[in-house]
Length: 122
Length: 122
DNA sequence: CTGCATCCTTGCGGATACTG
DNA sequence: CAGTATCCGCAAGGATGCAG
Image 1: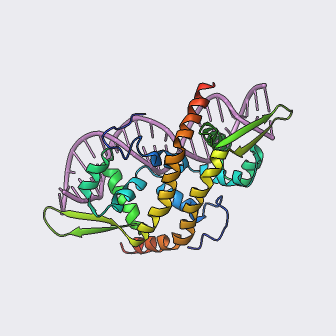
Image 2: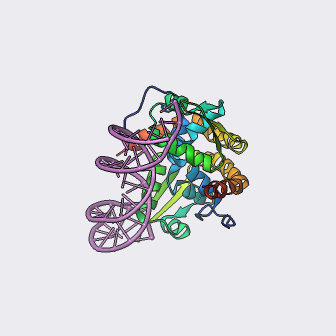
Image 3: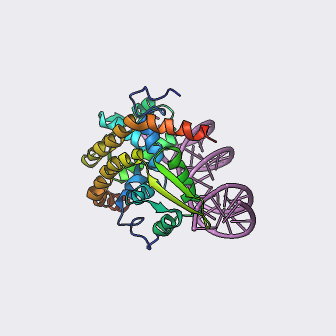
């Protein structure tokens, strides 16, 4: 599939759009951060994230696996044991994600202030 | 909106979540990029982005205005004229967003390769 | 333990029509 | 020109039950 030749973010084929779609969902970023701290089992992730449904955890992990961000290792034991970890590609995503988080930490107060102002002024 | 207090990463302690939610929707990032190139009128944005509905354009702009990312200036003329531009806060968002886009440009091919591999192997 | 299948609710986002 | 209002389809996401 040839796609990302356009320079504009407006193009749906633009890679930026695809990455935004990739991390835009509710749990992706959280999972990536969790896995950055080390390999985790399915149940560990579910316990740590607390609030995520099995469906969403599995679904998100599958998407990340499909995108080559996360690797999934199944041990043929009983009871089953599955470990998830970041791939090399996945690790490179940590940095840009952190950049965004740093912005968040620094500016969310301003955003919240703006919201209060906006909501209060009408 | 109910928030879960069990895990700090998902909640208030993790402003990243809020920022991700902020840019997670379909048009926010595009609009921010457009406005980074200068002040735009409503109809200019609509024409340039092409594919966005009035509803989504208005809604997204309203959200961004509420968050203090975009400023809205109405000229009391007939016919109406409204200009949108990035606020100082909004401008600071460009950089982390660009970081993410740069990652995309560099790594999307790998992601697409991983996808083909994944989809082909089953 | 690690999932997949299913139902069901919710809300995003598109299309269209109307207003100041 | 710059919106608002309304209807509607679709898919995201939660809850539950079942399987290997």
